Length: 120
Image 1 (cartoon, one colour):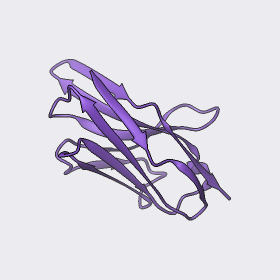
Image 2 (cartoon, helix red, strand yellow):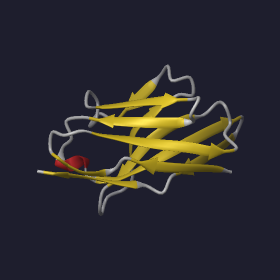
Image 3 (cartoon, rainbow, N blue to C red):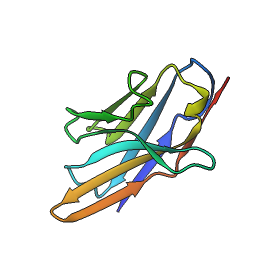
Image 4 (tube, helix red, strand yellow):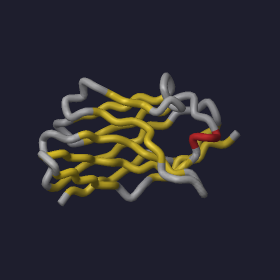
């Protein structure tokens, strides 16, 4: 099993910054992709950003490009999301995700979520 623990959420004014962290523990397959999703009140969960196991390739939702940066430290099994120029529409619960794909088998693991609130 894999456990994911997020931290770093909070309340910030528009234009401010926050950094989220997600520490993974347990039976972690070396080849995995880690990422962040978010869910605003009354809306579906949406993709924010992800990073490959080597850290060489990153992916971002259009809404956060140029503002958010995802990175990872494999020695610490931790992924980060640096969020700059935050907007009120970034307000949501942010969830860490770890995905492993071994042949046809895909496993997704989720953290408990951390609240990010951006005031105008």
